[in-house]
Length: 205
Image 1 (cartoon, one colour):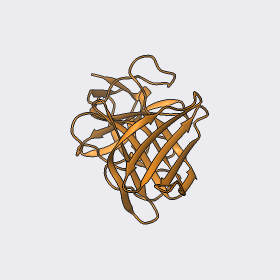
Image 2 (cartoon, helix red, strand yellow; image 1 turned 120 degrees about the vertical axis):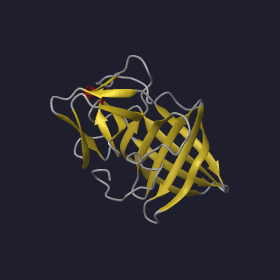
Image 3 (cartoon, one colour; image 1 turned 90 degrees about the vertical axis):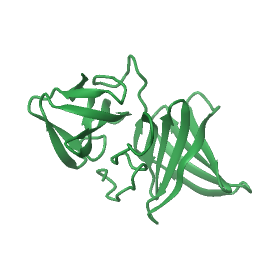
Image 4 (cartoon, helix red, strand yellow; image 1 turned 45 degrees about the vertical axis):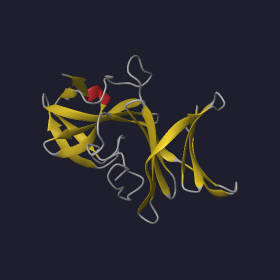
C-alpha cells in the first residue's frame, strides 16, 4: 500500500496493482487519494476514463467510467465523469493541490475532499520531471548500481515489494510523475512482481 495510506486498493484502482486486465496501453493521467476515496483518471488509446474507490467501505463506486477534460481556468485541470445520479470532478491546480467533488443531480454537494499523494501523467518528449522518459509498453533495462527496488507506490518511502538486479529487463506498464520528488516513476513487472521504479534507474531497451 502507499506510504501514508495503508488501505489496500483493489486491482485497476490502486496505482500499485497490475493493469494488464485492461486492454492496450493504459496510462495514468491523474491519481490521488482523499480521506475516504482513491481517484484515478487514465487514458486508454485516445479516451479518458475514471475509477473511484471508496476506502471506507472497500467498494469500487466507479469503474472505467468515460471521463472528459472540463474547460476551466488556466490555473487548474478538471476531469469529470457522470455515473448514475451524480457528477464527479477530479481537480488539480498548478500548485499540485488536488480535490474530489461529487455533486448530486439536484446540485447538492455529496462530497468535497482535498487530496494527497498525487501523481500526474507525463507526456512523451522533454519533461520537467527527472529521469529517462519513455512510453509504457516498452521493455526497459535496469541501470542501478546494484539492484533496483520495486516499491508499492510511486514515491520513496513506500513499501519495497521486490528488487530487479542491474542489467535485468523489466516490462513497463505505466508512467507517472511525482510532483513531490520531481521524478518520473514507472510501474514494472519483474519475475512475477509488480512495483514502481524511479525513472533514473531505467532505460528503454
